[in-house]
Length: 355
Image (cartoon, helix red, strand yellow):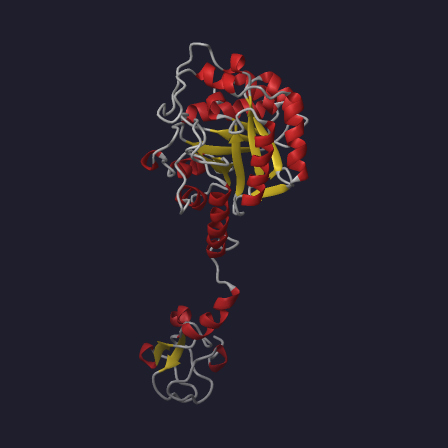
């Protein structure tokens, strides 16, 4: 059975080209105009969705919450202070951003970080994204699940038991379509810490779940982290997105821009050309001529008279594969030929007695 989830206008299945989420987050830095430019850039780069983050500093972090990011890139040492810088958008702004996404035919998404944000975003989004940090937040999980919309759940810094528990809460609260995202909660994530092999573990543990990857590694020309994750089964790919990677701040330096995204689209198109449409091993149409001519048939090693009972030394396996296959070698031994046959004759079933 093919696993698929409807994300807005796209039905995404496990072997499809990846569904790309440009994680704008708060890289708009409180400017509605910048947020709109980011939406347009994400669309030009080929993203399927432009995602924001909806929170209020006083609801997401204590005033005494320390930083956990690279302070050489983002010097703010308090989570509360950082969140306060970028929590100015309200319902009117998100409605305007959702309308702008609709105008440019890209899906609007925003991660809610409190129960009020879920209620505000519900009319604006086709699906929800839950951040890794809230995988152990039952009230938020239940609230999101109660909308009945598809859910993308990030699993950064999570034990399997925590993932199991979150899935149980979501399912019993109304969620029917859930995508699990591998993620490492390091900003940035060093390549040796990306642990993309964990996608294999997630697949083995949750074979009926669609998988994705939320990437915090530094972008490269090759976009190898996203390509590798996709090859390991991540069909939803999320990465922070910016207009300028040189800007100061927590989510610019490890983000991709529209040019990174466009390069990735070219590379992943080639990957999908190489992968093909199925994972079930079988001959393809262009191999028919090879099966016929490169496979072997049972061929006679010498002239045989009608009525001769075939013995092993009468036979050899040679190309082409247009006659009796060597798979039937033991079945042919002991049969009699029904006519005179020359050396090197490609044996057919019509040459042999039926019994």
